[in-house]
Length: 179
Figure 1 (tube, rainbow, N blue to C red):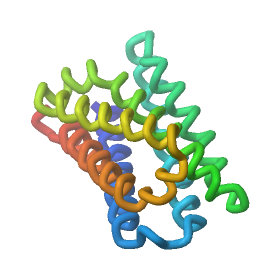
Figure 2: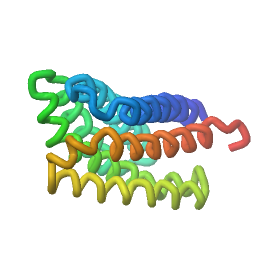
Figure 3: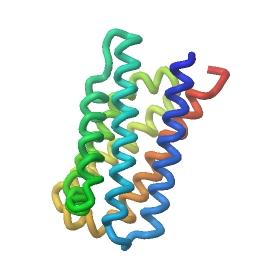
């Protein structure tokens, strides 16, 4: 019960950061990408660490864990560290942010069977759709990195808002005392 509550608080923090980052992206779409790269780097680090923690907690509890969560977490941490390097952050944003998008979505998709048990089918399908859209956006940004840089404020901002809502819904489900 305590682990579920701790994971719920982590998801609540992650969801709040995602929503704030999404709003920032919408309000400042043409701002210098250096600041955005640092913010995205911090978020990627937090997200990656949470995915690794999720893997470790599930591994300890069930004897197996979704390996995609571990791989996604490691890729997120690596992308975050590269984005935090200000000199290369702008180019890393164009190159590695799509990889982080894909890694994060794959990690979330790996959580689906457990989400269905804890949160029900409505949340399961919402998460499935949001993360499939994220996979498509990640692939599109890899195919054309220039489009990724130009449209990052709006496309990424909208998707970050959806991811934030997804995390908040899961957090409230985990923190619900009736469950």
